[in-house]
Image 1 (cartoon, protein in one colour):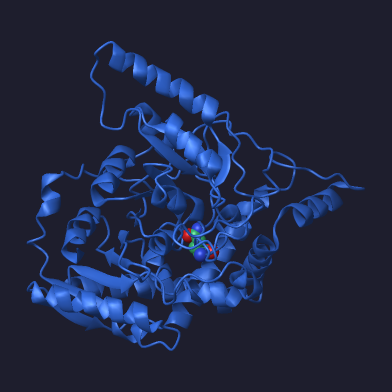
Image 2 (tube, protein in one colour):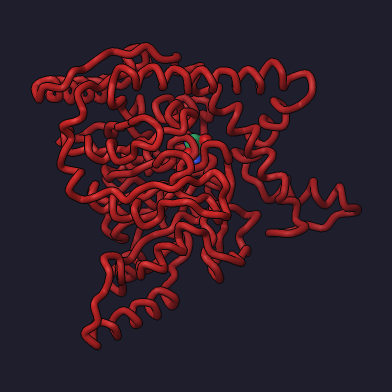
Length: 441
Ligand code: GLN
Protein backbone atom coordinates (compact mmCIF):
# COMPACT_ATOMS: atom_id res chain seq x y z
CA UNK A 1 0.00 0.00 0.00
CA UNK A 2 2.79 2.41 0.93
CA UNK A 3 4.62 1.69 -2.29
CA UNK A 4 1.55 2.37 -4.42
CA UNK A 5 0.81 5.55 -2.48
CA UNK A 6 4.35 6.76 -3.19
CA UNK A 7 3.90 6.10 -6.90
CA UNK A 8 0.58 7.93 -6.89
CA UNK A 9 2.20 10.93 -5.19
CA UNK A 10 4.67 11.31 -8.05
CA UNK A 11 2.07 10.63 -10.69
CA UNK A 12 2.21 13.07 -13.59
CA UNK A 13 -0.73 11.69 -15.55
CA UNK A 14 -3.27 13.60 -13.47
CA UNK A 15 -5.24 10.53 -12.44
CA UNK A 16 -5.52 11.49 -8.76
CA UNK A 17 -8.25 13.64 -7.22
CA UNK A 18 -7.40 12.71 -3.64
CA UNK A 19 -5.02 10.30 -1.96
CA UNK A 20 -6.55 8.32 0.89
CA UNK A 21 -3.16 7.86 2.56
CA UNK A 22 -3.95 8.03 6.27
CA UNK A 23 -7.08 5.96 5.83
CA UNK A 24 -5.36 3.34 3.66
CA UNK A 25 -2.30 2.96 5.88
CA UNK A 26 -4.47 2.32 8.91
CA UNK A 27 -6.28 -0.47 7.07
CA UNK A 28 -2.94 -1.85 5.87
CA UNK A 29 -1.62 -1.99 9.44
CA UNK A 30 -4.58 -4.08 10.49
CA UNK A 31 -3.80 -6.57 7.72
CA UNK A 32 -0.10 -6.58 8.70
CA UNK A 33 -1.09 -7.33 12.30
CA UNK A 34 -3.16 -10.27 11.15
CA UNK A 35 -0.30 -11.65 9.11
CA UNK A 36 2.09 -11.16 12.04
CA UNK A 37 -0.24 -13.25 14.20
CA UNK A 38 -0.12 -15.98 11.59
CA UNK A 39 -3.81 -15.63 10.70
CA UNK A 40 -5.03 -16.53 7.24
CA UNK A 41 -5.97 -13.66 5.01
CA UNK A 42 -8.46 -13.57 2.15
CA UNK A 43 -7.76 -13.19 -1.54
CA UNK A 44 -8.42 -9.45 -1.61
CA UNK A 45 -7.16 -8.63 1.85
CA UNK A 46 -4.58 -5.85 1.73
CA UNK A 47 -4.95 -5.34 -2.02
CA UNK A 48 -4.81 -1.64 -2.93
CA UNK A 49 -7.46 -0.34 -5.32
CA UNK A 50 -8.71 2.91 -6.81
CA UNK A 51 -12.17 4.42 -6.69
CA UNK A 52 -13.57 6.68 -9.41
CA UNK A 53 -14.53 9.92 -7.72
CA UNK A 54 -18.26 9.38 -8.22
CA UNK A 55 -18.54 6.65 -5.57
CA UNK A 56 -19.45 7.40 -1.98
CA UNK A 57 -16.86 6.36 0.58
CA UNK A 58 -17.88 7.57 3.99
CA UNK A 59 -15.74 10.41 5.33
CA UNK A 60 -13.88 11.07 2.06
CA UNK A 61 -14.51 13.82 -0.45
CA UNK A 62 -16.61 12.69 -3.39
CA UNK A 63 -16.34 15.50 -5.90
CA UNK A 64 -17.44 13.99 -9.23
CA UNK A 65 -14.53 16.16 -10.46
CA UNK A 66 -16.87 19.13 -10.22
CA UNK A 67 -16.81 22.59 -8.66
CA UNK A 68 -20.26 21.82 -7.33
CA UNK A 69 -19.10 19.06 -5.00
CA UNK A 70 -15.52 20.16 -4.48
CA UNK A 71 -16.12 20.22 -0.72
CA UNK A 72 -18.70 17.45 -0.45
CA UNK A 73 -17.91 14.61 1.95
CA UNK A 74 -19.69 11.27 1.51
CA UNK A 75 -22.14 10.54 4.29
CA UNK A 76 -22.19 6.82 3.53
CA UNK A 77 -20.38 4.16 1.49
CA UNK A 78 -21.48 2.72 -1.87
CA UNK A 79 -22.56 -0.93 -1.70
CA UNK A 80 -19.90 -2.13 -4.16
CA UNK A 81 -17.13 -0.34 -2.27
CA UNK A 82 -18.44 -1.64 1.06
CA UNK A 83 -18.24 -5.21 -0.22
CA UNK A 84 -14.61 -4.66 -1.16
CA UNK A 85 -13.88 -3.17 2.27
CA UNK A 86 -15.56 -6.18 3.85
CA UNK A 87 -13.26 -8.42 1.80
CA UNK A 88 -10.25 -6.49 3.14
CA UNK A 89 -9.30 -4.62 -0.04
CA UNK A 90 -7.87 -1.15 0.58
CA UNK A 91 -9.04 1.98 -1.27
CA UNK A 92 -5.99 4.22 -1.72
CA UNK A 93 -7.14 6.91 -4.16
CA UNK A 94 -10.19 8.80 -5.40
CA UNK A 95 -9.67 8.90 -9.14
CA UNK A 96 -9.99 11.74 -11.62
CA UNK A 97 -12.87 11.38 -14.08
CA UNK A 98 -15.06 13.50 -16.31
CA UNK A 99 -17.35 15.64 -14.21
CA UNK A 100 -20.49 13.62 -13.32
CA UNK A 101 -19.36 11.04 -15.91
CA UNK A 102 -19.98 13.55 -18.72
CA UNK A 103 -17.30 12.94 -21.31
CA UNK A 104 -15.17 10.57 -23.36
CA UNK A 105 -11.75 12.18 -22.88
CA UNK A 106 -11.40 12.93 -19.14
CA UNK A 107 -10.85 16.60 -19.87
CA UNK A 108 -14.16 17.77 -18.37
CA UNK A 109 -12.72 17.94 -14.85
CA UNK A 110 -11.65 20.63 -12.38
CA UNK A 111 -8.50 18.63 -11.58
CA UNK A 112 -6.96 18.90 -15.06
CA UNK A 113 -6.98 16.47 -17.99
CA UNK A 114 -5.85 12.89 -17.38
CA UNK A 115 -3.07 11.91 -19.81
CA UNK A 116 -2.85 8.59 -21.56
CA UNK A 117 -0.67 5.97 -19.81
CA UNK A 118 1.16 5.17 -23.04
CA UNK A 119 1.58 8.64 -24.55
CA UNK A 120 1.04 11.78 -22.50
CA UNK A 121 0.20 13.93 -25.51
CA UNK A 122 -2.99 11.87 -25.88
CA UNK A 123 -6.08 11.77 -23.68
CA UNK A 124 -6.68 8.92 -21.26
CA UNK A 125 -10.26 8.60 -22.45
CA UNK A 126 -13.28 8.92 -20.26
CA UNK A 127 -15.05 9.21 -18.18
CA UNK A 128 -13.15 6.70 -15.96
CA UNK A 129 -9.77 7.85 -17.34
CA UNK A 130 -8.03 8.11 -13.97
CA UNK A 131 -9.09 4.57 -13.11
CA UNK A 132 -7.70 3.15 -16.37
CA UNK A 133 -4.38 5.01 -16.07
CA UNK A 134 -3.84 3.93 -12.47
CA UNK A 135 -4.27 0.29 -13.44
CA UNK A 136 -2.14 0.63 -16.58
CA UNK A 137 0.68 2.26 -14.59
CA UNK A 138 0.41 -0.27 -11.72
CA UNK A 139 -0.50 2.50 -9.26
CA UNK A 140 -3.50 0.37 -8.25
CA UNK A 141 -4.06 -3.36 -8.63
CA UNK A 142 -7.59 -2.72 -9.82
CA UNK A 143 -9.96 0.20 -9.96
CA UNK A 144 -13.71 0.60 -9.71
CA UNK A 145 -15.16 2.73 -12.48
CA UNK A 146 -18.65 3.61 -13.64
CA UNK A 147 -19.91 2.93 -17.16
CA UNK A 148 -23.03 4.62 -18.52
CA UNK A 149 -22.19 4.65 -22.22
CA UNK A 150 -18.63 3.35 -22.38
CA UNK A 151 -16.79 5.03 -19.50
CA UNK A 152 -15.05 1.88 -18.28
CA UNK A 153 -14.57 0.17 -21.65
CA UNK A 154 -13.27 3.12 -23.66
CA UNK A 155 -10.49 4.30 -21.29
CA UNK A 156 -9.60 0.64 -20.69
CA UNK A 157 -9.08 0.30 -24.45
CA UNK A 158 -7.16 3.60 -24.77
CA UNK A 159 -4.74 2.62 -21.98
CA UNK A 160 -4.37 -1.09 -22.69
CA UNK A 161 -6.14 -2.73 -19.74
CA UNK A 162 -9.23 -4.90 -19.20
CA UNK A 163 -12.49 -3.18 -18.29
CA UNK A 164 -15.88 -4.78 -17.71
CA UNK A 165 -19.32 -3.28 -17.96
CA UNK A 166 -21.39 -6.06 -16.40
CA UNK A 167 -25.04 -6.76 -17.14
CA UNK A 168 -27.13 -3.87 -15.86
CA UNK A 169 -28.24 -4.76 -12.32
CA UNK A 170 -25.53 -7.31 -11.59
CA UNK A 171 -23.74 -4.83 -9.30
CA UNK A 172 -25.61 -2.42 -7.05
CA UNK A 173 -25.57 1.25 -8.04
CA UNK A 174 -26.28 2.35 -4.49
CA UNK A 175 -23.75 5.06 -3.71
CA UNK A 176 -22.70 5.60 -7.33
CA UNK A 177 -23.65 9.16 -8.21
CA UNK A 178 -26.42 8.83 -10.78
CA UNK A 179 -25.73 9.97 -14.33
CA UNK A 180 -28.27 8.11 -16.51
CA UNK A 181 -29.91 5.64 -14.15
CA UNK A 182 -31.19 3.25 -16.82
CA UNK A 183 -27.71 2.50 -18.15
CA UNK A 184 -25.42 3.31 -15.17
CA UNK A 185 -23.23 0.31 -14.29
CA UNK A 186 -20.41 -0.26 -11.82
CA UNK A 187 -17.40 -1.84 -13.53
CA UNK A 188 -13.94 -3.11 -12.56
CA UNK A 189 -10.72 -2.34 -14.48
CA UNK A 190 -7.70 -4.60 -14.04
CA UNK A 191 -4.70 -6.12 -15.81
CA UNK A 192 -6.14 -9.61 -16.27
CA UNK A 193 -9.43 -11.41 -16.79
CA UNK A 194 -8.71 -13.34 -13.61
CA UNK A 195 -8.55 -10.13 -11.55
CA UNK A 196 -11.76 -8.91 -13.16
CA UNK A 197 -13.42 -12.21 -12.21
CA UNK A 198 -12.34 -11.97 -8.56
CA UNK A 199 -13.56 -8.39 -8.18
CA UNK A 200 -16.79 -9.09 -10.03
CA UNK A 201 -17.57 -12.06 -7.77
CA UNK A 202 -16.96 -9.88 -4.72
CA UNK A 203 -19.20 -6.97 -5.68
CA UNK A 204 -22.07 -8.65 -7.58
CA UNK A 205 -25.43 -9.52 -6.16
CA UNK A 206 -28.84 -8.41 -5.06
CA UNK A 207 -28.95 -5.29 -2.90
CA UNK A 208 -32.10 -4.12 -1.19
CA UNK A 209 -30.86 -0.56 -1.71
CA UNK A 210 -30.99 -0.88 -5.51
CA UNK A 211 -34.18 -2.52 -6.71
CA UNK A 212 -32.77 -3.15 -10.19
CA UNK A 213 -30.18 -5.62 -8.84
CA UNK A 214 -30.49 -9.37 -9.24
CA UNK A 215 -28.82 -12.40 -7.72
CA UNK A 216 -26.03 -13.93 -9.78
CA UNK A 217 -23.92 -16.98 -9.21
CA UNK A 218 -20.18 -16.82 -8.59
CA UNK A 219 -18.01 -17.31 -11.65
CA UNK A 220 -15.67 -20.19 -11.09
CA UNK A 221 -12.01 -19.98 -12.06
CA UNK A 222 -12.02 -23.33 -13.81
CA UNK A 223 -15.00 -22.61 -16.06
CA UNK A 224 -13.11 -19.67 -17.52
CA UNK A 225 -10.75 -21.92 -19.39
CA UNK A 226 -13.56 -23.71 -21.13
CA UNK A 227 -15.08 -21.79 -24.02
CA UNK A 228 -16.13 -24.94 -25.89
CA UNK A 229 -19.81 -23.91 -25.76
CA UNK A 230 -19.03 -20.90 -27.92
CA UNK A 231 -19.54 -21.77 -31.56
CA UNK A 232 -20.40 -18.56 -33.38
CA UNK A 233 -19.60 -14.87 -33.05
CA UNK A 234 -21.17 -11.92 -34.83
CA UNK A 235 -19.88 -8.46 -35.73
CA UNK A 236 -21.45 -5.25 -37.03
CA UNK A 237 -20.34 -5.09 -40.63
CA UNK A 238 -22.19 -1.85 -41.31
CA UNK A 239 -20.50 0.01 -38.43
CA UNK A 240 -17.06 -1.01 -39.65
CA UNK A 241 -17.80 0.46 -43.07
CA UNK A 242 -18.37 3.90 -41.58
CA UNK A 243 -16.10 6.64 -43.01
CA UNK A 244 -14.94 7.60 -39.52
CA UNK A 245 -13.44 4.16 -38.98
CA UNK A 246 -9.69 4.22 -38.43
CA UNK A 247 -7.99 1.79 -40.87
CA UNK A 248 -5.57 0.32 -38.30
CA UNK A 249 -8.38 -0.40 -35.84
CA UNK A 250 -10.40 -2.03 -38.59
CA UNK A 251 -7.43 -4.08 -39.81
CA UNK A 252 -6.61 -5.26 -36.29
CA UNK A 253 -10.22 -6.22 -35.71
CA UNK A 254 -10.56 -8.14 -38.99
CA UNK A 255 -7.32 -9.92 -38.20
CA UNK A 256 -8.76 -11.08 -34.86
CA UNK A 257 -11.83 -12.42 -36.67
CA UNK A 258 -9.59 -14.38 -39.03
CA UNK A 259 -7.73 -15.91 -36.09
CA UNK A 260 -11.03 -16.99 -34.55
CA UNK A 261 -12.07 -18.62 -37.82
CA UNK A 262 -8.80 -20.54 -37.77
CA UNK A 263 -9.79 -21.80 -34.31
CA UNK A 264 -13.00 -23.22 -35.77
CA UNK A 265 -15.35 -20.47 -34.65
CA UNK A 266 -18.01 -19.35 -37.07
CA UNK A 267 -18.02 -15.62 -37.81
CA UNK A 268 -21.24 -13.95 -38.95
CA UNK A 269 -21.85 -10.40 -40.21
CA UNK A 270 -24.72 -8.65 -38.44
CA UNK A 271 -26.66 -5.65 -39.60
CA UNK A 272 -27.20 -3.16 -36.77
CA UNK A 273 -28.38 0.45 -36.53
CA UNK A 274 -26.03 3.07 -37.96
CA UNK A 275 -23.62 5.08 -35.79
CA UNK A 276 -25.65 8.33 -35.98
CA UNK A 277 -28.83 6.64 -34.75
CA UNK A 278 -27.04 4.85 -31.92
CA UNK A 279 -25.21 7.94 -30.73
CA UNK A 280 -28.27 10.23 -30.98
CA UNK A 281 -30.50 7.76 -29.18
CA UNK A 282 -28.01 7.32 -26.37
CA UNK A 283 -27.31 11.03 -25.93
CA UNK A 284 -31.00 12.01 -25.97
CA UNK A 285 -31.79 9.47 -23.25
CA UNK A 286 -28.60 10.11 -21.24
CA UNK A 287 -29.13 13.87 -21.34
CA UNK A 288 -32.79 13.51 -20.33
CA UNK A 289 -31.86 11.31 -17.38
CA UNK A 290 -28.94 13.45 -16.26
CA UNK A 291 -31.05 16.62 -16.42
CA UNK A 292 -33.48 14.91 -14.10
CA UNK A 293 -30.85 13.39 -11.78
CA UNK A 294 -28.83 16.58 -11.45
CA UNK A 295 -31.86 18.72 -10.67
CA UNK A 296 -31.22 17.84 -7.03
CA UNK A 297 -28.05 19.90 -7.12
CA UNK A 298 -29.31 23.40 -6.39
CA UNK A 299 -27.16 24.35 -3.42
CA UNK A 300 -29.79 23.45 -0.84
CA UNK A 301 -28.78 20.00 0.30
CA UNK A 302 -25.42 19.31 -1.25
CA UNK A 303 -22.39 21.13 -2.49
CA UNK A 304 -21.54 24.75 -2.99
CA UNK A 305 -24.23 27.34 -2.70
CA UNK A 306 -24.05 30.87 -4.02
CA UNK A 307 -26.59 33.20 -2.42
CA UNK A 308 -28.37 35.78 -4.54
CA UNK A 309 -31.34 38.14 -4.06
CA UNK A 310 -33.98 35.43 -3.78
CA UNK A 311 -34.27 31.64 -3.81
CA UNK A 312 -34.85 31.23 -7.54
CA UNK A 313 -31.92 33.50 -8.32
CA UNK A 314 -29.75 31.55 -5.86
CA UNK A 315 -30.58 28.29 -7.65
CA UNK A 316 -29.78 29.84 -11.01
CA UNK A 317 -26.46 31.38 -9.97
CA UNK A 318 -25.42 28.27 -8.01
CA UNK A 319 -26.06 26.01 -11.00
CA UNK A 320 -24.61 28.38 -13.60
CA UNK A 321 -21.39 28.89 -11.67
CA UNK A 322 -20.83 25.33 -10.47
CA UNK A 323 -21.61 23.12 -13.49
CA UNK A 324 -19.06 22.85 -16.31
CA UNK A 325 -19.86 23.88 -19.88
CA UNK A 326 -20.23 20.22 -20.89
CA UNK A 327 -22.57 19.39 -18.02
CA UNK A 328 -24.67 22.49 -18.73
CA UNK A 329 -24.91 21.49 -22.39
CA UNK A 330 -26.35 18.16 -21.27
CA UNK A 331 -28.73 19.59 -18.68
CA UNK A 332 -30.11 22.13 -21.15
CA UNK A 333 -30.35 19.47 -23.89
CA UNK A 334 -32.01 17.01 -21.54
CA UNK A 335 -34.62 19.48 -20.36
CA UNK A 336 -35.28 20.42 -23.96
CA UNK A 337 -35.99 16.85 -25.10
CA UNK A 338 -38.26 16.30 -22.11
CA UNK A 339 -40.28 19.46 -22.58
CA UNK A 340 -43.77 19.72 -23.99
CA UNK A 341 -43.78 19.89 -27.76
CA UNK A 342 -40.46 18.05 -28.03
CA UNK A 343 -40.81 14.97 -25.88
CA UNK A 344 -43.09 13.00 -28.26
CA UNK A 345 -40.91 13.67 -31.27
CA UNK A 346 -37.57 13.26 -29.56
CA UNK A 347 -37.63 11.54 -26.18
CA UNK A 348 -40.40 9.00 -26.82
CA UNK A 349 -38.97 8.20 -30.24
CA UNK A 350 -35.61 7.44 -28.62
CA UNK A 351 -37.30 5.11 -26.15
CA UNK A 352 -38.88 3.28 -29.09
CA UNK A 353 -35.48 2.95 -30.78
CA UNK A 354 -34.09 1.61 -27.52
CA UNK A 355 -36.78 -1.10 -27.56
CA UNK A 356 -35.75 -1.94 -31.10
CA UNK A 357 -32.11 -2.24 -29.97
CA UNK A 358 -33.11 -4.75 -27.29
CA UNK A 359 -35.18 -6.71 -29.81
CA UNK A 360 -32.28 -6.67 -32.30
CA UNK A 361 -29.94 -8.10 -29.67
CA UNK A 362 -32.43 -10.81 -28.79
CA UNK A 363 -32.44 -11.76 -32.45
CA UNK A 364 -28.64 -11.67 -32.77
CA UNK A 365 -28.21 -13.94 -29.76
CA UNK A 366 -30.48 -16.56 -31.33
CA UNK A 367 -27.83 -16.84 -34.00
CA UNK A 368 -24.50 -16.15 -32.30
CA UNK A 369 -23.11 -16.67 -28.78
CA UNK A 370 -20.96 -13.55 -28.70
CA UNK A 371 -20.92 -10.19 -30.46
CA UNK A 372 -17.50 -8.64 -31.09
CA UNK A 373 -16.74 -5.03 -31.83
CA UNK A 374 -13.86 -2.58 -31.71
CA UNK A 375 -14.09 -0.32 -28.64
CA UNK A 376 -13.86 2.92 -30.60
CA UNK A 377 -13.89 3.95 -34.25
CA UNK A 378 -10.76 6.08 -33.77
CA UNK A 379 -7.45 6.22 -31.88
CA UNK A 380 -7.20 8.36 -28.71
CA UNK A 381 -7.32 12.07 -29.61
CA UNK A 382 -4.65 14.64 -28.69
CA UNK A 383 -5.18 16.44 -25.40
CA UNK A 384 -7.34 19.52 -26.13
CA UNK A 385 -9.03 18.30 -29.33
CA UNK A 386 -12.24 16.90 -27.83
CA UNK A 387 -12.92 20.15 -25.99
CA UNK A 388 -13.03 21.97 -29.32
CA UNK A 389 -15.54 19.59 -30.88
CA UNK A 390 -18.07 17.99 -28.51
CA UNK A 391 -20.05 16.45 -31.37
CA UNK A 392 -16.98 14.57 -32.62
CA UNK A 393 -16.45 13.39 -29.04
CA UNK A 394 -20.03 12.07 -28.87
CA UNK A 395 -19.55 10.22 -32.17
CA UNK A 396 -16.46 8.49 -30.76
CA UNK A 397 -18.89 6.55 -28.51
CA UNK A 398 -20.52 4.82 -31.50
CA UNK A 399 -19.31 1.34 -30.56
CA UNK A 400 -19.98 1.42 -26.83
CA UNK A 401 -23.42 3.00 -26.41
CA UNK A 402 -25.45 0.27 -28.15
CA UNK A 403 -24.43 -2.33 -25.57
CA UNK A 404 -25.26 0.14 -22.79
CA UNK A 405 -28.75 0.74 -24.16
CA UNK A 406 -29.15 -3.04 -24.44
CA UNK A 407 -27.98 -3.41 -20.77
CA UNK A 408 -25.62 -6.20 -21.88
CA UNK A 409 -22.37 -7.48 -20.34
CA UNK A 410 -19.35 -6.22 -22.30
CA UNK A 411 -15.63 -6.61 -21.66
CA UNK A 412 -12.82 -4.58 -23.21
CA UNK A 413 -9.81 -6.73 -24.02
CA UNK A 414 -6.66 -4.71 -24.78
CA UNK A 415 -5.34 -5.47 -28.26
CA UNK A 416 -2.05 -4.47 -29.82
CA UNK A 417 -1.73 -0.95 -31.15
CA UNK A 418 -5.46 -0.46 -31.56
CA UNK A 419 -7.94 0.51 -28.86
CA UNK A 420 -9.10 -2.97 -27.91
CA UNK A 421 -11.95 -5.33 -28.65
CA UNK A 422 -15.30 -5.53 -26.89
CA UNK A 423 -16.78 -8.94 -26.14
CA UNK A 424 -20.53 -8.94 -25.53
CA UNK A 425 -22.96 -11.71 -24.59
CA UNK A 426 -26.68 -11.87 -23.89
CA UNK A 427 -28.03 -10.36 -20.65
CA UNK A 428 -26.74 -12.03 -17.45
CA UNK A 429 -24.15 -14.06 -19.39
CA UNK A 430 -21.17 -12.19 -17.96
CA UNK A 431 -19.43 -15.49 -17.43
CA UNK A 432 -19.45 -16.18 -21.17
CA UNK A 433 -17.83 -12.85 -21.85
CA UNK A 434 -14.96 -13.64 -19.50
CA UNK A 435 -14.71 -17.17 -20.92
CA UNK A 436 -14.36 -15.89 -24.44
CA UNK A 437 -11.53 -13.48 -23.59
CA UNK A 438 -8.76 -16.05 -23.77
CA UNK A 439 -9.78 -17.00 -27.32
CA UNK A 440 -8.61 -13.57 -28.42
CA UNK A 441 -5.14 -14.06 -27.00
N1 GLN B 1 -18.91 9.21 -23.13
C1 GLN B 1 -20.23 8.90 -22.72
C2 GLN B 1 -20.93 10.13 -22.20
O1 GLN B 1 -20.29 11.13 -22.08
C3 GLN B 1 -20.24 7.83 -21.67
C4 GLN B 1 -19.85 8.33 -20.34
C5 GLN B 1 -20.09 7.33 -19.25
O2 GLN B 1 -20.21 6.13 -19.49
N2 GLN B 1 -20.18 7.84 -18.04
O3 GLN B 1 -22.06 10.10 -21.89
